[in-house]
Amino acid sequence: PGLLTLRAVEALASADVLVAEPDVLDVVRGHARAGVSTPELTVVDVSSTAAGVPVLRDAANLVMEAAKGGRRVVRAVAGDPGLDGNAGVEMLACAAAGVP
Image (cartoon, rainbow, N blue to C red):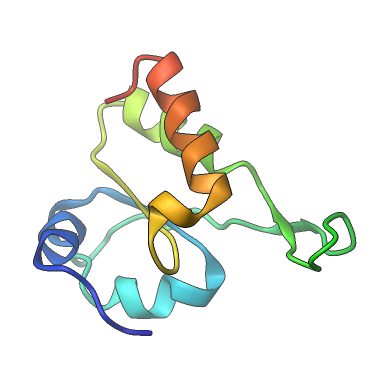
């Protein structure tokens, strides 16, 4: 908790929009530039997953909407995004939509 790579800190410092899960928002917001937009990921249904993990508002759509508007977007998740099942789905959705 609270550990970020140098690349993450650099990306946060240049972001126009920060899309972060509630449990990491306070940590990463401290590295974002003043005035960065932080659209909320809201809990939709806490009972919808077997592990009790809340379902969040669709982060991929928030990222794509902001990026297509020409803004630089950073998506922050807790831990390794390669091990986060939702992060992979979000990355594939962005790639399919032509969002770098």
